Image (cartoon, rainbow, N blue to C red; front, side, top):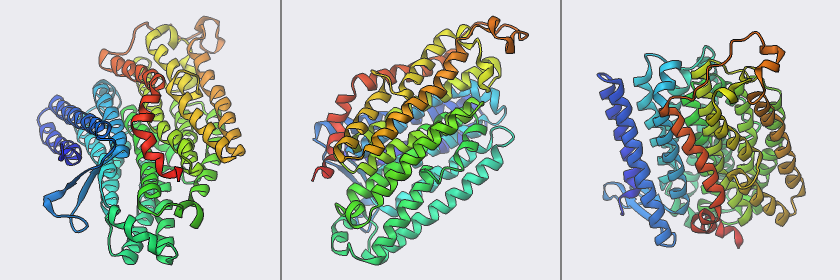
Length: 497
């Protein structure tokens, strides 16, 4: 049990290497190797969640090579990292099951290079969640980013340019974060998180520490695509293969948000991000602006993938609001929205890939009649839409509910109004797609000359992952209290004073 924090990333790193080597001979072998590695990591993650619940959240620490921190590298599994790794590895397993048919259509001949990259992205993300020091968080951040660039650049014609823009922004964000780490090391002489949490209370007025905090949060904000640092995101998600978007959009930006939360709760002293330096409130206001901006821009989009991309800009703002509220119930709402958005956005991108496979369309007006041609897939789509809008009992409702309660408790009525308004805006752009999906093509003059869409669902390897995601959205909504009480309440407890 003490080795679980190391086994999760190691299983993915090993799977990535083996998948690359096996892929030289067998495309199917590369896929199965990557999938088995992801399943192993998910199983270890579930063991970690169980250990946190049974042990009342007591952290499990693993020192690599028996080098005791702060000198050695430490992996730490606590309630927050267990929660995050379970989300990341679950999404990884589902997307890897879904991937082969979609990749064969959208990236023919390049599939065997995709699977090692997918597992390397997952390894980098879980490493960020499990590492016990701020420098190795940067190392894993860049591992995930480099693999993500490879995944995203192989998409449509505009993908390489969009990915280059992402790379430039990512390099700037990573540079800011690393410079912040250097300032922290200069001020404290350590990069171990537990060690920092003990030394920083005596250095709250240090200019080096203040500069470090600002640089690290700005760098992670760029990586998170927090408004107004979101400019790289829409083009990347629009031009990427469906599989890449279904993996990157649900988890990549959320782990950068996790890193900010980790710094807020466990590294810097209590009150540092609120009283000494108003970083939390600043994140909250930028997030509120991003929610409205992303929702309004999503309404104007005609490409399904681009609509989801701008929707993500807004949805990331909910997580930022949870940070900005800086009270337990608001933070719980932000953390719960991480899993909710991962499931919702992963589902919607996978459905977009299924529709593209069956009919070759990505423009929203071309979705007319898809509901009749793929009835069960569109049932799952409707579940995802209801969750994005925030209709109970779907998962999306409950994170917004906690955020509303947190806003009321903090007296943040502007943010309260933003959450309500964004739900209405989400209803506008998502129900427009639902209306297109279920419209009778025979009564639509725009497509009356088009051949009737052949009836039939996506292949089973795509249909069942979509179904599992839709069911998961309902399950997380119905059983959200269990997630909150078992894991998230103890994570947010320090904010209660």
